[in-house]
Image: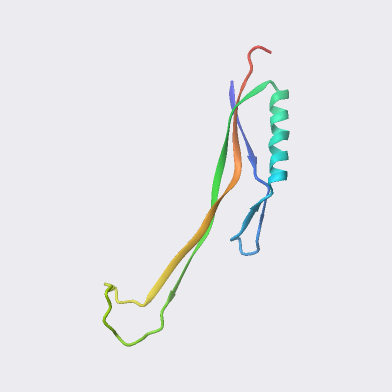
Length: 104
């Protein structure tokens, strides 16, 4: 019999939700505790796969109106708006796949 287990990373997030810090020591302890439990139940670990999540945001705005000037890049909409995105990925947890050891 095969089974999957999930360990969530221990993280702290800033007030804006834009900065995530993974506590490696606590996350490692959570993984170790699960691995001990899995082994005690007669499972053998086949793989550990990190799960990645992301944090990001998009900002947009409107440029102040100014006199029309010649530009190399023409805008078909004629709007004076701009936008940019930012963000990053982090390890939000781990999937652990295991199967029962038949020799026990």
